[in-house]
Every structure is written in C-alpha cells, then in structure tokens.
Length: 328
Image 1 (tube, helix red, strand yellow):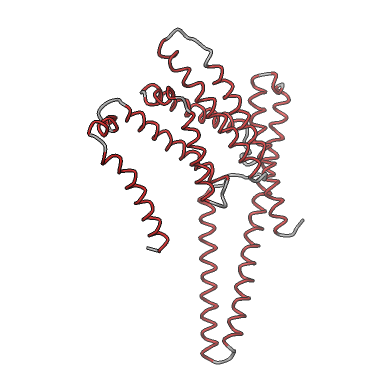
Image 2: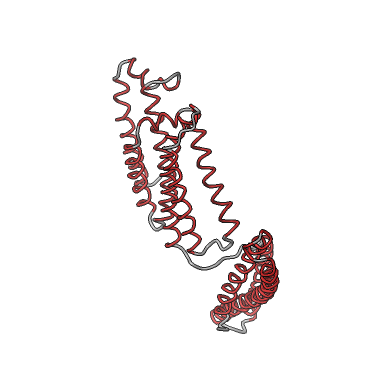
C-alpha cells in the first residue's frame, strides 16, 4: 500500500471515529431512538430513509457526471456530492415519507419504467438513426413534454382515495425526473458525434478479427524465423535486419487494413443498392396507396422511411471508407 493510500485511510478512520464519539457517549434512549428504524418507525427511520434517497441521487448524478466530465473523475465526484446534498436538503419531508411507503415506492418505480419504456418504444419505432444529434433533441423534447404532463397530474382528482394520495407525489417527482433526463439528452446530443452509425452483427466482426489476427501472427512468425536464420548465417547485420522486418510489418499491416476496407466497401455498396431498390419500390407502393391519407399508406410510409434512413446511413459509411482509401 502506497504512502498516499495509507494517509487517506488514516484520515477516513479518524473521521469515522469522530462520528462515533457522540454515539458512544449518548444515553441508551438516544441510541435506541436512532436505530429504531430496524424495529419500527421513529426519527432514526426518517434519517435512514433520507440517507438512502441521498445515496440513490448521488449514484444517478455521478453516473451522468462521469459522462459529462469524462476528463476528470474527481470533478465528477465533487459535482455529484454537492448537487445531491443540495437536492436532498430541499426535498420536502412529506415526499421522503411517501417514498418510504409501499405504494409510493411502487408508484415511482412504475413511473420511471413507464417513462423509459415509452420513450424507447416510440423512438425505436420512428427514428431508426440513433446517433444523429436530432435524435437526442427529440429525446429531450419528449421528456419535456412528459414533464408538462406530470405537472398537470397534481390538479387531477379521480375520487379514489389511493390514487388521489398518489398523484401529488408522482406529479412533482415525474416532472423533475423528466426535466433532468431532457437536459441530459441535450448535453449528450450537442457534446457527442453527429455521424450516422449502423448496427452490424458482432459475430461476423469477431470472426473477421480472429482471421486477421491469425494471418498477422503467422506472417510475424515467418519473418522472425527468417531474421533468426539470417543472423545465424551472418549474411546481414542484425540491426538492419530488424529495421527491414519492421518495415515489412508496417507494409503488411497496411496491406491487410486496405484489403479489409476494400472488402467492407464492396459489401456496403451492395447493401446500399439493395436498400435503395427496396426503398424505391416502397415509395411507389406508398404513393399508390395514398401516403398518410390511408392506413395502408401510413404503414408503407413507415417501412419506406426506415429503408431510406438505412440508405443515408450507408452513404455516410461509404463516404468515410472512401476517404480512408483516398478515393475521394
């Protein structure tokens, strides 16, 4: 263990012992009251519940902060601690008690699952291009709309006691959760890449990498054997032979890389032509069916839009490969 780690452990141990001093010197009733949450409700239960909510807030904010402050984990940690402490300080006590109740926990879990599930369902159905900046903006707009919906829930009365008790809790929590997620989507959209990506089968890529690795390893062994043989026979200087081998390795890697790119380019061009022909046929059928004016036309329009988006994505990938091969 390094000296810095030992010092850090000593400081943390001292702080922990300092926190335990009031408990050791306290009366039995005070200690019992603090830990009464294990056996019933009391002041200790509320403190424990509030600490649990703070831990959850810290974990969520820290997960988002690591992506925003990717260059410094320390800044992300400090930011998460400060924001979570401020948040837990100003959350009303009644909301903390509602979280601790059974139906409150169930309602908030269902709320979060409904928001995430509905968002994924809608966006995966209508926006097949996932990494474009517009996709993140659409996420944010959807979350802000959901925040407005949850804000309106506080004014709704159903006449059912359990639901009327639950809506004032779900409304504010859902609103702020959606606002935070919407802001996170905007930050992710404008801080990331604007390129298109296409999901490819991982099995094929893994097999291609394994084959390429085996070929490179086989050629390296051949070059090493040749180098050893030349060194033993004394035909060449060892230093010049190593330099020649390094040049061969670089040329071999460039050759394999270029061959792989050319093969990938041919596949992408063929796939693009297939998608383009399919999109053209769907466009004709959707036009004949009346586009969005009829039910059949709307279904064909959705299928055509997905195929057309694939064509755009493939064109971007082809353009990137052609730049690597210096065709453009």
